[in-house]
Image (cartoon, rainbow, N blue to C red; front, side, top):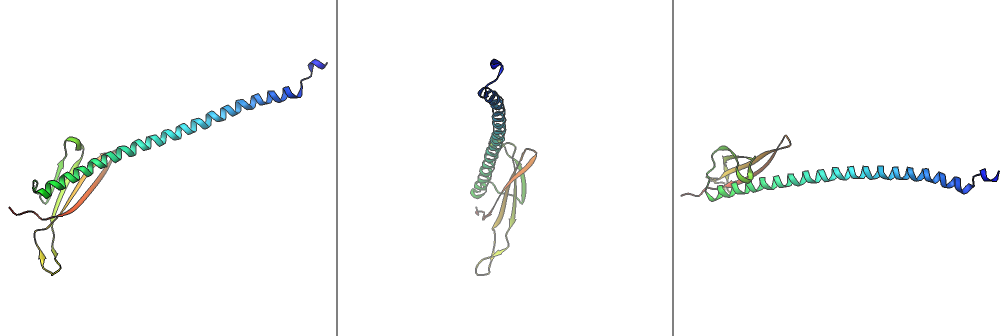
Length: 142
């Protein structure tokens, strides 16, 4: 009769085997949730990096257009649109010019000063993104 009895230690060991399986399943679940969360973070980081690069290109396009206007190489009309080429492919530059009606500190009219607005727009993910630069320009007399 003694051989059929199960010792107390053996019962405890058997119950720990089932508990170990549950712990492994719980650990795998927690690991999977962590990997999925990390994947989302990486996806958002890549998207933010791409947006930063695009905005850098837009700022460079605005800077180039401003330099062209200030140097006199381009004389802006009252309003124009231009599709950009090269490294700015997919972007559109809109230029507007408005004559300022301002007075100086002596209350005299200031003539020949224009407010130039440069706006670059592009599409990203079905959404139109824009960057704008506004500056004053006094064209050189030739």
